[in-house]
Length: 501
Image 1 (cartoon, rainbow, N blue to C red):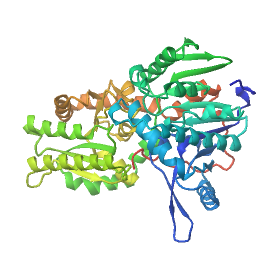
Image 2 (cartoon, one colour):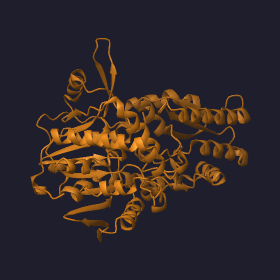
Image 3 (cartoon, rainbow, N blue to C red):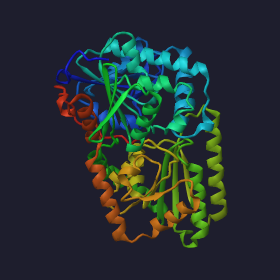
Image 4 (cartoon, rainbow, N blue to C red):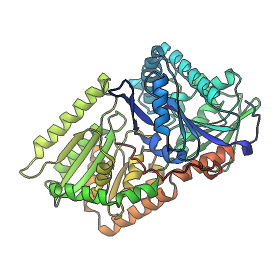
């Protein structure tokens, strides 16, 4: 897809994702309430777009009629960027989102083949949705825009733009892992997905392992291309088009999290909660309900730690927060029931007067409440079976302003590549190993705790969200974030929102 302009001509940043960064709900006047959304993508990109005069394109979660568009215009007022709704017909939403995105790509790319459901109509609905997204991009953007498309829901957008004869400078970032060849081969539409990804000008991944997996698949499944490597990134030439592929680990707005964690509101919330856990070491687990997060394994490991290290009994408490997700899916309801049964087993075995080993919360948290938990916790458990990045691990470090906490981190979280020198690394399938890590974290000398946390905080501070954006834009458009000018209607910076609230 040859380009009709130079990178120096690019004027505006346009973000495209499956959902807009807001949540709509009906109000009492036949209109819509609009609230800020949650999730890692929104946490990452909202501060990047703010005040840049850019645009965010996505599905609003309902039919995009005039009232929805009016509500979105009102919600965008003062943010410094516009919200543009994609109108998806009801007939394809189930197959596109629930079907192909979450019953095919999500489990496959997380190495969980047994959970895949390769229904043919899922693929056709996925293509139809990507075609509608591409049409919206074509209608809403110009050749001087840089179109940055996000995640596995929209892997075909660049190809769909090409099919309707629209040329845009495009980048794509995959927020989840990219699987190795032997896993990717199981996808019936493997050739179509690879060719679609190669229509982007830049394809970005969270880790070097993901990038290598992608290039290995390209090399074996599309032998007609030419692949070269330079300074850590790859160039894939096919016809008159060149696609670059590289590693861009996503960060967070460290300065904002650090500032908010020190705020009087957070300190007050800590004081309000501390009396309930006086003289108890606090272990924090906070995860969206999903089978990739390793929640059953974590609870069993905590139980094993209490059995093998009796000195922990009465002295530590696991605060396990589970954020509701996909509550209408039977498999997720069953997982919730399994987790709650495991929590009940542990509490039934070990509870003593005045001490409960696991405090279980199944709900979303207010930002101040979550930041207080981050700051109060002596240990944070991130034991994902597979994760693209995991921003909880980085948010915990940013909020650990006293540099006195310990992060236990799965080897299979994307953040392990950056934080492994400070965290205690674990295999989430190794129950005894995780139990040993919990005991080690609780008994770790203060000097080691502080040294490890300072090292991680330095990394999260340095490789923050703006570093990530600059890295991607330099590779994809020969620009930095500052090259997209701040809007003349500058508004005060909005506090960063945690990825799980």
